[in-house]
Amino acid sequence: MLHRPVEPSQYVSIRYSERLAQAGITGSVGTVGDSYDNALAETVNGLYKAELIHARPAWPSVTEVEFQTMNWVDWWNNHRLHEALDYATPTEFETTYYQSRDAAPALT
Image (cartoon, rainbow, N blue to C red; front, side, top):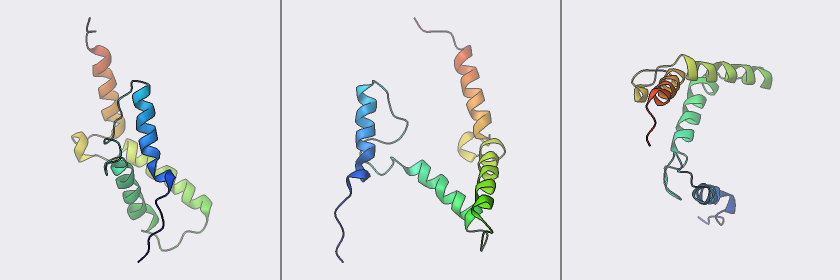
C-alpha cells in the first residue's frame, strides 16, 4: 500500500514545544515528537465518542449534538469521578491544587 507523504501539520507539536522552550515554559505533555503528545486529548475524545456520540444511533440535529456535548463536558468536569485524580472530579482536583499552592509559603 502506498502512503501519502507526512503532512507538515502533523509536526505542529514540535513547533509548539520549541516555542514553549523559547518562552521558558515546560509543557505538561510528552516530549517533542513522542506518542504521548496527544494521548490525553485522544483518550478524552475517544471516551466522548463512545459514551455520547456512538451511544445514539442517530442524532436529530447538529444543535442537539452541541447541547448534549455541553452537558457531557459539564458532567466530565464537575460530576464524573476520575480514578487518576483519587476519585475526585477535575474541578475538585484543580480547586484543591490551587488552594494548596496558594497556601504554601513562598520559597526565597
